[in-house]
Image 1: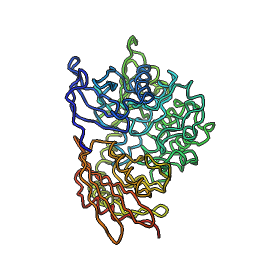
Image 2: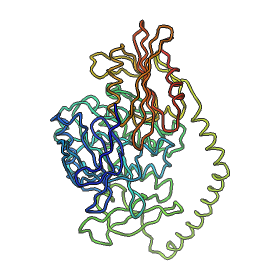
Image 3: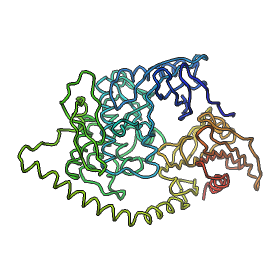
Length: 517
């Protein structure tokens, strides 16, 4: 399909570049000339423009976001309509990427991971107070934006959001399989504990680099068991953190924390025990009418040690982080603080010296390990892929678009969820017709320039290869291969490699796919 061009304007906004695309919408970075500000504009995809239910859901997301006033939830600044009738939402622009982006390289340090989870928890609490469920909390929906004090985590994308009144009745199954609560995957009645489960899964991913369950469908997500603690994957974590996350991920919601606040407060309490005074790293923003001098804001200093800055903070900040650290008034206690900080500086300097001394070798070894090609097998399907691209491996059944049949499939991805924005391989067994339908459908998910397919015959197996190159800022390469064996059916192989990788690399991966003994 031809690459969709970059529009010069969306309403009164000047378009800068494309930020991303999904099955239902495309997001653009734009400039608001009247306010001299960068904004993100989410536009309904043209192939859904005439679907009343999808259009209604799109606009409902905007209404949900407008009902919530929290510094940790993306804000809607405007709503408009293009000349062709498609609606768009003008949203807060998060300039520092997503949590999913950061986890592609490595997990977060303990303090940073807890900080992010606490901030996202505040956003969820704000939604819940307004009678809303998010229903799709995952690393890709946790954004970071610059502030005067550093950065802030914000929760985005209420495309699956529902009012608690609606969710209290039987609902349609929905959500991202690796992060969705079992009761949501089954379409049961929901309450705030469904979002708490997803936040627990985000906490697990932030600390380990992978989701707690490697599942590739809502059916499998509805049958998961309680995961092993994050520390069993080889990460040194406090036992209290382990237990808090495992409880949030209980399949039986009656055994979870009663609410998000209880969960995040437990995490912060664990950090206070292990780091002697942990405080969140971002400042809270004053609410209109707040009285100065009430509450406290916090930040991490350049030396990565806690410091406290007095200012006004909204109630949700205090609730999420638990009681503030006690203040000492005795003269002896006042002088003890600087002494402890000086000792802390010497200790930090020693640790940094060790890290610098061995860091180059460690990261060099890690880079080589991630580039190592390893075999991945599930069921009858196997493929050889770089270790660093195989954080998520899931075997499942899949149904090609336009088909009534389900087939075996294997997904290997650098992300927890396969999409054309990730890096990895999808292999699905089909018949020839359904494989070709799937290829046609896949091209709709992103901005790609697609070449003419090439056909070859190898020992009776007819192979069709089609390359697509990402448009705009994305130069990723997608190879879609259909192999018609003539006897055992067909298979669809989709290989997405990042910018800088060659066609030969994509072909090498596709050729490594084998099926059966």
